[in-house]
Image (cartoon, rainbow, N blue to C red):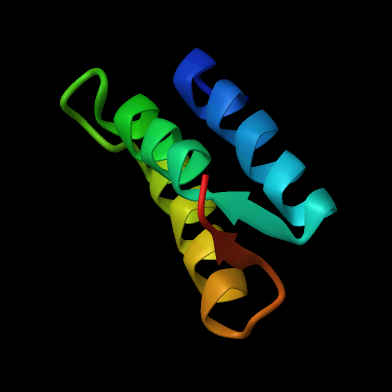
Length: 65
């Protein structure tokens, strides 16, 4: 079961994966949400790692905005 923060994070990351792109603003919102409670739990860490991997391999492109 995902924490509420991790569930929100998953929705935002899933949208980026679906769109194959993420804006700088969306990326900053994701990081802010992950850090909102001053603790990145294992679920959040896994979601962030997945996003980072997809950005690294070009599956998700970071765009201005």
